Image 1: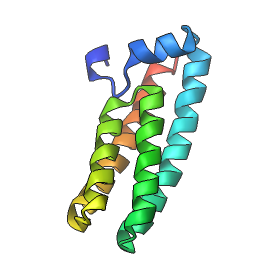
Image 2: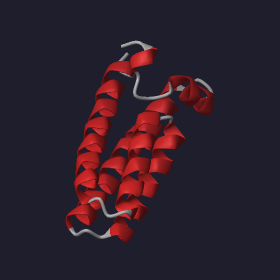
Image 3: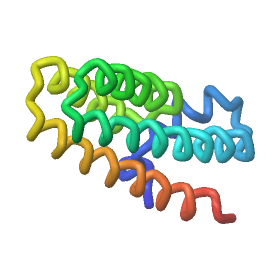
Length: 116
C-alpha cells in the first residue's frame, strides 16, 4: 500500500508523532476504538431521528478524524453533521455506512502498515 492509497495523511501523522511509530499506532488504535463508539451512538441517533445527538456525535468524529489525519473520514463526518442538521435521514443512514467502511479501511491499513 503506498502513501497515495493511505486513508491517513501519513506526513501529518509523522509530524504529530515526531516519527514515533509506536505512538502513531497507539493514536490510531485509540481513534478506531473511540470512532466505533461514537459511530454506534450516531447510528442510534439516526435510527431515533435525534438530530441533536447526531450533531454531537458527528462533530466528535469530525474532530477526532482531523486529529489523526483521517481526512476522508473527517469529510464524511462533516457531511453527516450537515445532513443531520437538515434532517436528511436517508443521507445520514448512507453516510453512517460509509463511515463504518472507512473505519474498517483504517483498521485494515493499521494492520498492514504497522505489522513490521
